[in-house]
Image (cartoon, rainbow, N blue to C red; front, side, top):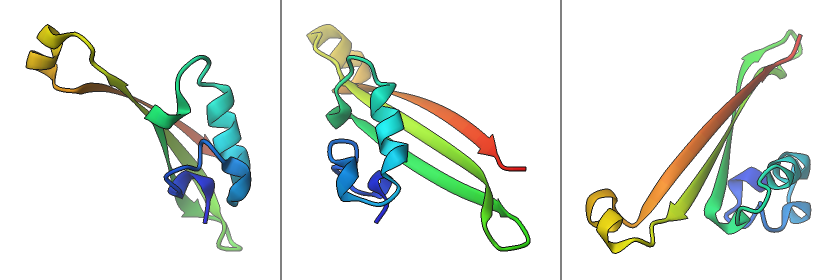
Length: 89
């Protein structure tokens, strides 16, 4: 199973396949808690050998809202999401 499909893949990427994806995400989180992050990888496009040629990585980070007033309006947490796409040529 790829690390990005496992619930603890960002915490223990070496225990799963495609660990380089999760290591790269964690290294770019800076001081953020990897337990609050999730990763999704989409593959599309195919070359003549049937290998995917376009990869989209989506990283979501769920930040708990600590202010009681903000919780009233926004809920328990705030989710920030970022996408990156790479195409093979």
